[in-house]
Image 1 (cartoon, rainbow, N blue to C red):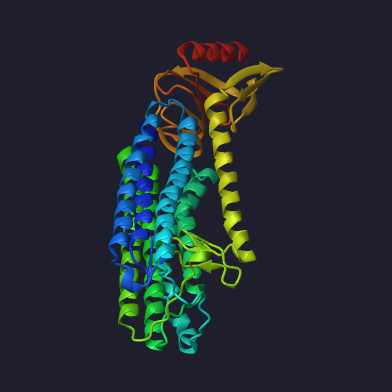
Image 2: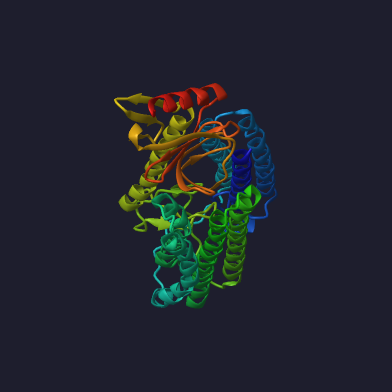
Length: 460
């Protein structure tokens, strides 16, 4: 149930992000709509508006399809298969999104070709020295990241000074810091983005680039702060022995929602202000680069930039016509594929490779995915069946509604090893002479009794 709530929340956020990302294609940006450059005089052409309207309806159907095809995840019993289904769902929605855009992008390009709505300039080579001189003053100060860095470090300090310190808990506490660093990297990318020239008037160019860099760098600062606060509220319930699923979900969903809304607002605001500047400029420079673009994929060997502003969507994109751009673009996909495959294999092992316990030559061997353990029977001080335990915190392990494997903080016992495959079953409590506790529960009452008998007979 908990995993379903978390996945449901994640999918809702992903769907909303998909929908608004697709919808940015309908907003006129520097004369571009649905990824096609049009003369400003034809933006309101009836045929153009009809194609845009049909695309909007298609995007709504896309949203509905996304909801429908996600429902089967609720009838899947294994967490690993749920995760794999989620990855497949995201992959399918990405393909569907590209097909949706490609269909209407192609129709608008055909309309443009039939009406010969071409703009003479193919590339922009103009350099505005005044804009170049002022480009480093356009982003907000990086000192604004200090609050989020301080907030992100608080959980790490709490873990280090805690007597139940563990490496797994330290990794969990570092999530906020990793998020802040990620937004700092995005900040640097926005800062390093080359200034662009859209008018022969330096004042217009300065204002155009200032709006973009100022708002997006401020956005990364706000996002870093929001996520660091959110991670605090995710982490604190763990240290306060609270198992509130609702609080955990809200702590993740609310910051993510705020960030997505912020991205949507900034994109619309930047586009609106930039369009206003260009439309009021007496000598704008129009550029037709359609041949180098498909959605957010840019391939222009004549452009030395490796990172560019997208025509569709919110994220920055890379120039595949540039060697550095290709390395980053393909490298990110390879990294994502390796990560997804690794997570899938790990979760499959946790679900389908069950625990086994055997005693060989006075050595108790507990075989479990990623958390195997063995000890001498002479180390056993006590073995007892108990009805229940209260797990306060996972410090380094895997846990779902069904099982808990690895290191956990258990109320009254401190950090313990858990090998629990049925949380509604009784538990074997093994106390070692060094004070460490091990809790064991098989997939059934019979399996638990079998392990209890095995351990008691060999510890006599």
